[in-house]
Amino acid sequence: MALDRLSPLDAGFLDVEDNVNQMHIGSVLIFQGPSPPLATFRAMVEGNLPAVPRYRQVMRRVAFEVGRPVWVDDPAFGLDYHVRHTALPMPGDMVELRDLVGDLMGRPLDRQRPLWELWMVEGLKDGLWAVVAKVHHCMVDGVGGAELLSLILDVTADAWPSPPEPWRPGPMPSGRDLLVRSVTEASSNSRDAVRALRSTVGRMASVSQVRGLARSVSSAARVIRPMPPSSLNGPIGSSRRWAATSVPVADIKAVRSSLGGAFNDVALAAVAGGFRGLLEKRGEPVDRPIRALVPVSVRARDTAGRAVGDGALANKVSAVFAELPIGLADPVKRLAAISAEMTSAKETNEAQAGESFTSLLRYFPPVLLALGAQLFSKASQRNVNTVTTNIPGPQFPLYAAGRRMIRAYPYVPIGMQIRIGVAMLSYDGEVNFGITGDFDHAPDVEVLAEGIKIGMDELLTAAGTTSSNFPCLSLV
Image (tube, rainbow, N blue to C red):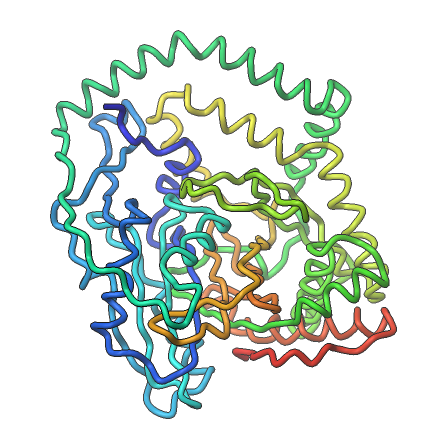
């Protein structure tokens, strides 16, 4: 039986992690009350575990790093460790929840156990309760994470937890077995490497042609140029701050219909407006762009062009780099500049070129890849100022133990001297923004959250329309 080995990209998320570069992603889910008993919540999770077998597996490394880590069943798996309970002092407000999220997300996941946690949070005012979900990025990407939540939650209010199925972990391979099988695979890979290189280069050429590939390389090369010094970059610690806000999907569609651009372009324009306001309040120059790493899913697309889950929890993601034009005070010009930037990235196939490159990494010695990732994560850099990721979520209600989920906010990790990151997750008529900041160097993440709302209002005014007044909730 073949080993369930991590991809080079998944292994890279492990290799760059240390006490400050924490690589778990997550979400903050808010539900209507009353909160269910903890036993009922755990029963719901346990009943759905067969749909996500990775949740009962642990990562095991291979001796001497001769092969990438593998997934194996955890013989000591215990649900009580992963599904936990906490409460806010009643009546808990959203500011207290925000602070709790920052605290929970600043704690690393235990690598000796399956790399996920669910925290049931009681004590929110107005009868609400919440779930804080953490999962390591080596297990899922953003789209896979949204798909995973759909598996854990229910699509109807009257769903009842499936009875627990007997589960017996598979045999745990010995360290010697992992080593021998990895050496054998490495020998086979060396013979396949040249063929893979030829195939990949041919595939890249067939997608973009030589001219397009040249443009892609040229576009990616610009990232080598450092950006001007900014408080957005610098050393970070292990503790986190978090804030969130929401805008209606209908508002983004209205701006798109009036001013043009893609759905994601409009969201990025609001984020650019938020960063402009943040740096202005910090007394820093806003006459130059900031560079954002924008993860792009390379999963299959639906008829609307949105990435869709495919049941595979591994990462299927590449990236493009966008310069957010915070120097433009006019929101219409900001949107047009971002739209042109993202269109250029699509035309030059930046994401596809990145995917083709990462596919070749499977043929490199894991020990060299691990060393390179560790050195890169510790290097001083200001080539990238922030990360902004947009995750399409379900546009229908989900339930936990019969309680409707009314909000789903994302959490994005930060690292490599990036002090603030922004994630966007659409759910049931809203686009929810989650802002992660370093505790010591980004104490004002709520200013960015407020600025995103202001940026969206500016776009609506420019579009000659008003907000749909969808009942969004802000954690600021």
